[in-house]
Length: 121
Image (cartoon, rainbow, N blue to C red):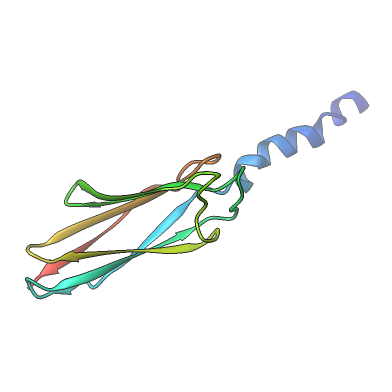
């Protein structure tokens, strides 16, 4: 019985690593509607616990209507400002715009893309 209990802490530790893994996540903030021809600011709030040469967000992208319009690249030599940080992108509303953003941790990956729509009025 004792032999079975010895590996138990190791099993618990190994299975909980994924629960503690910190994937980069994003949130998009922009107006839900805007007058055609108006320039709006899209704000991407990036959340990630870790900002060191070994563990950091390594990229964030923004797509508009399915096309990548901006990509921010980070590396151990060019780290983000902090673990949690904000990026901005200005765009002119010509029609309805579907915005998508995603960020990626160099170790744990991504929490997935987020999206929103700006309706052109």
